[in-house]
Image (cartoon, rainbow, N blue to C red; front, side, top):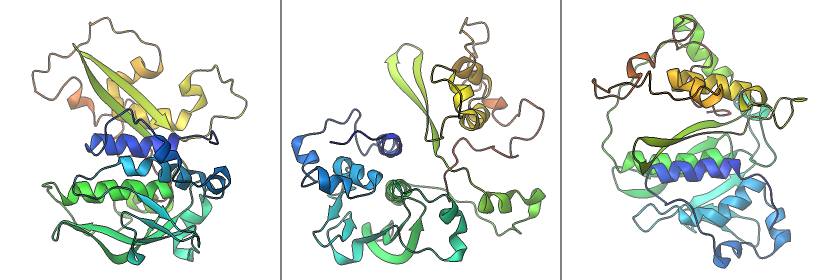
Length: 284
């Protein structure tokens, strides 16, 4: 099988694991590989879609449904259920309203139109409004999150605001987006107080910077975003600072070390400024 990057699908599977829809690592079998008739069929799909066809069925929603992709001989693609109402329109025509999607359209991870949604009221996957996701990987993550929120108790706060309030921050989020996805995964491995911190990104490395250069030099935008979320932990992750236990928090507030500093920017500015999100996704 073709060895392309699996970063986008890796992020999808990490999300599914966090929601308890799969267990890592995944062990692929011949049945997974055989979702494609042959290498030619695999290569004929956008890479991320082809990969999702292989691993998607391992995302088990626990109610008899899975993040399974069905591809028919006529080229029709369906998801979750092999039924006409669950069809995906991969790489559709996009109206002018979706200019951000057009600007950042990726051949290997193109936009998707679908009507698939999970209803928390009926407890079923349904076909309703037309959704346009920025990419195949965005669609897959929406399926995971819509099922998770539809099957768990959630609390909601909403408000209508002028998009230019607060210096135009909301307008900026709607009209500008990084053309990459970055995520931080913090995993408790059950080894005393040790946790595994991973920063995963699809950001393209800076041209001319050696592959042996530090992560922060090769992927500066991801590093900048992650520093906001990690706060005082960031130097340990990116700058080589070593843990000597001198600044460990006693967790007296029950929130873990550095909790009160999460909204404080190192430059003294409010963290709600540019690049304040720990995750930025094209078009989302």
